Image 1 (cartoon, helix red, strand yellow):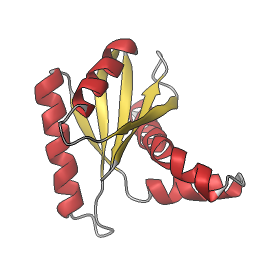
Image 2: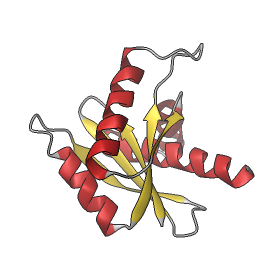
Image 3: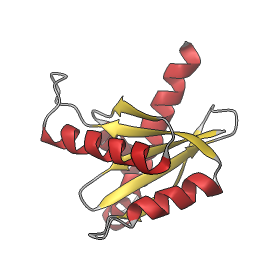
Length: 138
């Protein structure tokens, strides 16, 4: 079964899914957050569609390693997913993933307008790939 990576943001949730061997992460899209909480239904649909058995949620930590308000919100989101979908949810330190994604897109000469459209998906891909690399080392 595959793993799903989520980059939880104020407006959007970036989504990435691993290959069946859990070697590589591919960005699959962005889910717009809604007031009615329908993003959980969309995540559930993607879990089913991609045969996902576990989810990795990016945990934004402060540079000194502490967890601030953003991190607490992400932890609450991860707990909600765990309760609603009844599958394992892991938190993964996402410090600087959005910065790395932005830098990669700039180096690839992607326009500012297009970067806005894919930055969340790319950050989710980096979160998931870093997690996959860490479990491969175990």
